[in-house]
Image: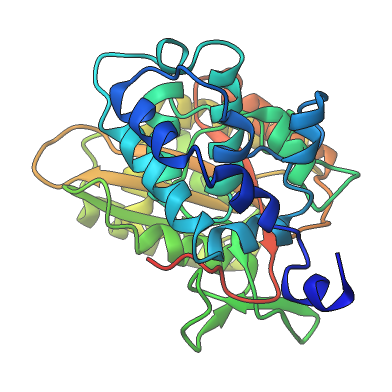
Length: 367
């Protein structure tokens, strides 16, 4: 490749264009028929480098996140990839293994995992993972594309494949340092002007979710002493009930205001506390309060940064809940944070770490 050509096509994407030239229509027809019959998987649904070791797998592997972004932004390859995934979504009554055979079904999952990491929440890659793989990502792909080699996204305490899904983008850009803190644009495509610290970014994106319809999305940042604050506001567990009204909860917070201030504790909003009582359940709330007020945990914290919930608008069903620890790209997870997330999971409460990935520019895919 000449220097001039290298500047025009730094990732050698022409290798995909050439490979697809005579077979793309046939591949698309086979996908629509729900039965792959010929050989084109490597260059129609490319995977990240390090997953395949045959000559075609190596030749058509995506070598970097920048190359994956360029692939999606390519005038021919990007639309074709989206078209193939949309064709997949039209298949009913067949599994990925039945459509592609093995191991090509796993190659599909790897491809979808890679591009879902770059696409807006709810894009066709997410939907394909939900439909054909129960929402489970390819752990190896997540590990390979992690920008933090010391704490890869595939780490069991980080982005493990069975982490409770959030369906919001973890891509951030526009990093700015203010008063010793890091700020990013709130929106995923960097089109706005507002910025926030990492926890505010994730909370803002969660609250602005639109799907699934019929839910109200809410949440709050949690102080490290949130369970100790609960013990002050609801002494001996009084008032902790799935039926507690917002008025009851506001009254309890107001009555405890003086003591909370004296101890430098803070409660979440009444709406958040109500969602906790209903989503976690009174028994487990009391267990968590007892855990964090025990003498042996006097100097231990580890409470996740955020409590997120989605409440059905037209029913009395409990909210869907998530505890989330937010980490910047190279930020380590403290032992007490690992321990707390593991404990929450052990008692059946969804909890996870969400590690942000920085980009220098907005994602080429648009909402």
